[in-house]
Amino acid sequence: MTRSRADLFDAETVAMADFARAMSHPARIAILRRLMEEGAQTAGQLVAALPLAQATVSQHLRALREAELVVATEAGTRITYALEGARIRHFCHAFQQALGTAGVPTEAMRACHI
Image (cartoon, rainbow, N blue to C red):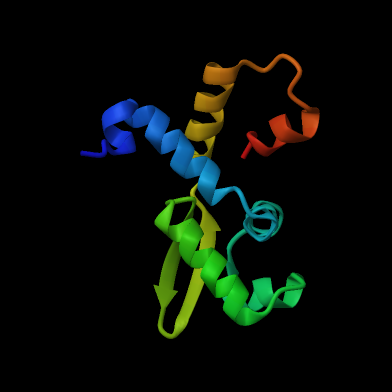
């Protein structure tokens, strides 16, 4: 019988891997960066600001929501997306603790100061 990753590793390690998977696409990083710099945005605002099709932005927003890195707030027919800063900070801190910060590029560390 095959063992699942949850059986092989502790919950925090599995959660860190899920976070890393959610962050593993440049489009998702661009979306998070835009939300960090500009604050809450609708999908339409993100599409207008990024070189991505609406369907692509929607797919990446869904992945970020599933990873709980962004929160969606509905107001009528509009959905606004915002960073879930506490969760992002938690995982950045967890990575810093697990991997240390020596030799980590400044740009990577700056992303953790959300």
